[in-house]
Image: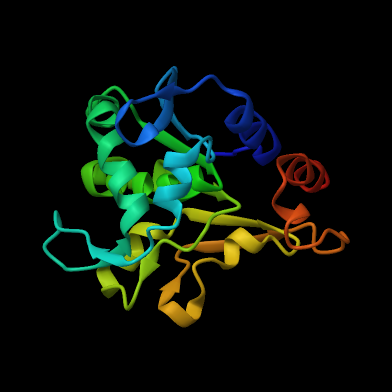
Length: 205
């Protein structure tokens, strides 16, 4: 399945989100024919930033194999999960595209794993994209779990500082694929993260 990353990111930053009261968690679902699109919003308030900075690793308890993730992002995703679960479980859905930006990119990564785990029948058709994605996973990931992220792509624009946080020194790391865009741009580490500069770099792909 071909995904136009410029269009996907443009939709991700411009869609109207459902914001839940708990954890100010924001998401949106769209179904087109048999394709489910899951979108997750960037930080939009103090609660999001509180969760962004709550980065001690926490076990993801619902799996047989123990693995660890950023505590704040896990908290937000668990708030959203019951609301997206019926869409993911719908057997009329044959493909899933997941997208998030910044804070939302971290949620997209967790949603990607959730979709792969719950819909192994369509795993090759589940594609996830984290634009300006922070590091979410901590420590060594069991080998069989690494395979769940085969079709997840971290999109890093130029020197985007958010994609380097939390620091590797603290044990966090990316999983899946890294697509480095805008490498010839002269943005500093903060400007590299701005949505308008992601759009510029994606337009050149």
